[in-house]
Length: 617
Image (cartoon, rainbow, N blue to C red; front, side, top):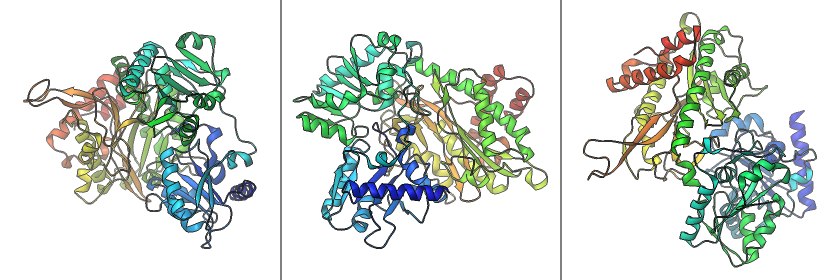
């Protein structure tokens, strides 16, 4: 049985800890690049515990807790409180909700005096290692880097990293040459007084060198490292099988290609140099290697982060084209839901497969941008739900269905959520008054973000309350951020910008918004065990003319948002009496644009359905 398998794996890990002289070990969801999505070879936490979420860690002690506990714990945030119970055996692991339970404190309370807790320095940031190490030192314990990851030592059928070739992302889609981008980075290095920057983030490397890959599901990147130098040259560390003659020609003489396993040695050669390393993406192992070499590592933001987030005109137009194409595919899917999924024979899995098929019909889809959240009824109340064979529910009449999905295209990355009512007969024909009320409050928040006008210098976190205010009015809220950045044929979650509560839990909420940044706009509401609602479009930050303000006047410069996503929003879920006249005007204008963009791409019954769905309120 599955749980016996995970129990055996836990036993094997504990035996390896004893062999290595360790009293415990920390197992994160991460790779050497601090990526959000990781390759199969790096799915150590999933292999060990069965947990399939995208964020979390486990601590495994060599023996049961000194307090008589299980000696192992899963650390997850509020998004995964339900999922962790479904996937991780409670006989084997305690469930610890972050930040309510701090990892350092749990270890200090459960490990014995003088315990040596191991960690892989290439899977954790320096900040994490410093924080946990300090907490353990206070208790007479120690955090020690391991020479060999003990999970790897017992994972007999661990997959190998992908060997797929890297590809060129042509200027037609990137809008800027790699040479131009490297010059910008070199100028920054000289201004800041750095000799070089270590760039471990895979999407940053992809952006800087105008390359892409297929090494990580859902994110088109190639496993590699870059050291960028102040003279405009760069070193790319990548497996040799990934380099084609075409890619060598594309990179040119200013980029030296070296084997990926030479990276640590290259760090050891940087004696006397001042090197910038992003603390969010540079693992502890990088800092340790530089310090051991006599270099001076300085924690500073990756110099590609901000220019990558500010899309150039070519990228903006690419996004518009990708959104229009993707919007037609999603509209076909919504028509299918309205006409076929009401039969009671379709499931969450079959719906996700149908949506993928509509995107595939474009002939241009390279991948999904994340695993589709196809969530029926109570599963819709789990914001980050992921369907599988065991969890898949039938889509039932008289229920809410939520679908959050996206596509990767050469010209853009998409992300959209639509929540619909699966109609049935009699009282199941229309949403309940409560569902309509909640949906409309979410819609009002969505409109408030879309229509926001704000002065240059405003951070995303300062806009978050715009989306929540209508739920707050009736004592409700939602537990996730309102918006995240989105890449251009790159990560669907891209920093540094974010719209979320400024509580410290969401990095990027203090980042100033700039013209050209793309964000999601996705307020929601979730009633545990019953239903969930989310409405998500992508929006582009643009300049706004405002009476008495604007360009160079005393009022300063103002910004706002242009909508990029055009797909009908469920009209039968709206309680129109809760909308103001301005909000109704937004709805009507939005759906007029939907008709304009979608109609040329649709025909027959789908076109007729779309026209009806876009009727004015």
